[in-house]
Image (tube, rainbow, N blue to C red; front, side):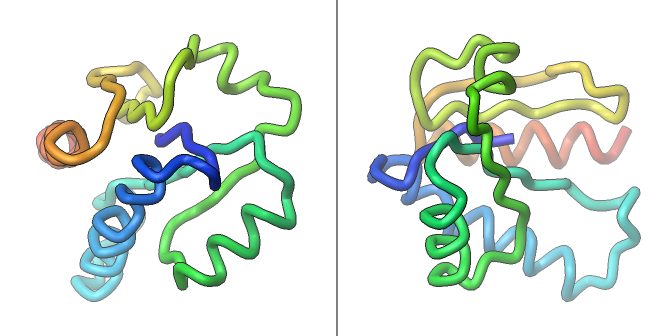
Length: 115
């Protein structure tokens, strides 16, 4: 999961890599249980999120957290916040930031997928 906003440059900088990961998984023909599910969660307007996802040609899910219930439940205090969950929904890795932090999150997700 990534908590993000359309107005956040660091958040937007993560999306090409997440898109590439999602596209690579699709091209490899992996079954849903053998892929990393990528979900970007924002409290921006639905229209802004949809326009952004369309412009990105997004290969992963974008969800609106209109009332910030999801962000609050995950105690999000800064963005981009990246959270890797195991198959049972337990957080196994969390970080705030882009760049090397995104690389660490992807590596943690790939490691978890192999379990």
